[in-house]
Image 1 (cartoon, rainbow, N blue to C red):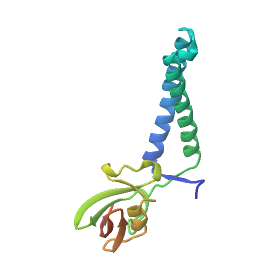
Image 2 (tube, one colour):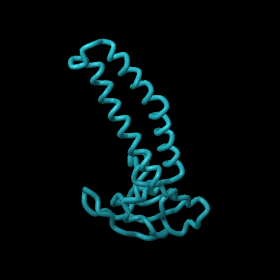
Image 3 (cartoon, helix red, strand yellow):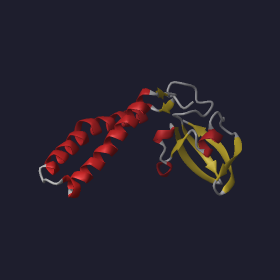
Image 4 (cartoon, helix red, strand yellow):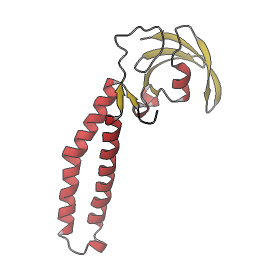
Length: 154
């Protein structure tokens, strides 16, 4: 499913905000920096010019990437659906390796494990999706297999 980008509403909002910032703030700023740096003369040894051009390349690449992600976005909204199985967008309380944790299952571009946002294509995400409350299973992690159990789906 390379042509699809599953996201929560929040994830899509963040991508759109970043795109807006890049297009309407950072892109014009870097263009001004390039214009100013050109006025310094010899471009072959002009570090300010080369730095600005490098940043411009990064910005343009990121804009293209964000536009593609947004175009392919499929917003998953499970707020109104039944909470009988885990799916993208659910907050889930789990028992992972005998420790209670609360995670949210999100799209691949939204993941942030430190803040409990787990991608549905990560090992834990793949293992937890479509599971029910009370269901136990093993998750293959870099540290080996760990026991997991679904305690609550929100």
